[in-house]
Each structure stands twice: as structure tokens, then as C-alpha cells.
Amino acid sequence: MIPNLLSIAGFDPSGGAGVAADLKTFAALECNGMAAITALTAQNTQGIKGLHVPPADFAAAQIDAIFEDAQIAAVKIGMLACGAIVEEVAARLSYYTPPFIVLDPVLASTSGEALATSDTAAAIIRHLFPLATLITPNIPEAARLSGHVIAPDAEGMRRAASLLHGRGAKAVLITGGHAEGATSDDLLFDGESCRVFSTPRVATCNTHGTGCTLSSAIAAFLARGLPLAEAASAAKTYLNGALAASGALGAGHGPGPVNHFHSYWKH
Ligand code: PXL
Image (cartoon, rainbow, N blue to C red; front, side, top):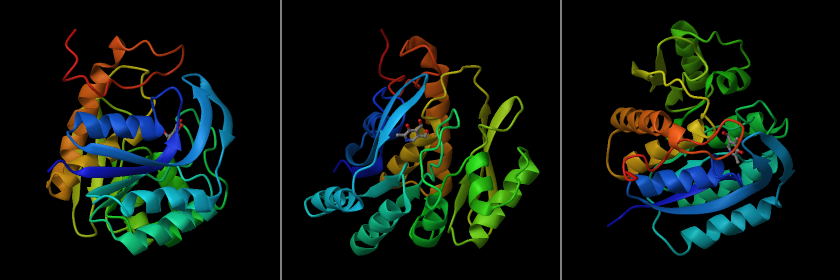
């Protein structure tokens, strides 16, 4: 059976980030995608123009509609917009207990615009850290969630992972896109050991939605039966290919999307 995956995230009309990126990633990795939308953004590749957040009980109603009808193999969580939605999502997932939950703790857009109210980070730590199989913060998100300054280097990433594990996350993948160097290194810490996944850094400005794509790819590989470290490694390889092929897409004037279907689209 093809696994069903659920993305709980925001909508980006330019298709580069949020549920659109998640659904493309699920499809490219041979999973059947579904989505519960927690926020509508008005945005293009150049920035966010507006934000509409539905009532938290409407986010919950979408999640109920899916779980009442389908067997879900894994959930990916992205933008949640406010503490009330975090609490509803946590309550619904505690009730339905899907096998895997990959949490990308989105607090701001790639260009730094706020995508969540100030109560969101604390609510994520309190209500979602205990439920998540894995959290996938980048360095700025790890700094916000840990309350510490995190150096954008290997030592800083190790410290961030340990701090967030100490705050209740079962496993932490700190993504290294914001660090520097010839390689992009992601660090996985499961409370016992650390592993680093390294790919050559791709020289492109088409990095919109990379965090969404990586976390969705990990959810897809977990649903397909890979152990956590193998799923993180395979997801990084997939994202690297999507970044390397992103130049073929001319989606706007700002930082564009990655090419999710790079291994299928040959013409
Ligand atoms: O990349 C983070 C992100 C997540 N979700 C939505 C977004 C963005 C960044 O712009 O728009 C909906």
C-alpha cells in the first residue's frame, strides 16, 4: 500500500513552501499526500504580503476529517501561526497517535518575516515536543527555542541539539543551511549519539521552502520504513538534488522554490 501522509502547515500561494512544498515532496517520494491548513499567507518569492489565520477549531476540524477517514502513516507539522493552534494540533495528535510526527518548528520565513505569534515557541515546546518523533529546527529556530545564542558552526549545532533534547524533544535534527562552509551539514542527536549528514553546498538563491521540503521528505522515508538516521540521510540527498536542479524553475523575481520533481522531469 502507498502510505498516506498528512501535512499540518500553512499555505504559500507561490508553491515553494508550506503545504504545497510538502505535498510535492510526498508525491515525489511515492507517498499519498493530504493537508490540513493552519494559515493562509499572501506571498510570492519576494516576501509575505498578508496572513490569515483560521480559528483553531477549524484547524482541528480538518485534522479530524482526515483521521476519521484514512490511515495516516506519518504527520509533518510546519507553520502553526499561534499558540491556540499549537494546542489544538497537539490535542488531536495525542488522540489519534500517528506512528511518526516530524515537527518543523516554523517561526519565521526564510527572509525573516514572522510566521508565528510570540506565544507559539513556548506552546510548541510544551505541547508538541513530547509528541514529536523528530524536530528539525534550523539554527535561528534552535536559538529561539533554546533561548540561547547558537553559533553557526559544528560546536554550536551540537550544543543546540543537546539543549533542545533537554527541553523534551526525543530526537533533534539541526539543519545547517544557515551555517557556512563548502558543505551543508545537518546534525542528528537522539539523546545518545550524534550523526552528521553532509552534502556539497549548492550555489543557488532558490532556497525557499528547503526546511518544509526536508522535514516532509523525512516523514515520507519514515513512512516507507527507513530508520530515523537513514530517513534523515535520504531526505538530505533528495533536497540536495532538488536544490541543484532549482535553476530550471523561473518562479518569480526573489528566492525561488527547489525542484521537487528533479528526478522525473527530464525535458
Ligand atoms: O519556510 C518556512 C515557511 C513555512 N510555511 C509557510 C511559509 C514559509 C516561508 O515562507 O510561507 C506557509
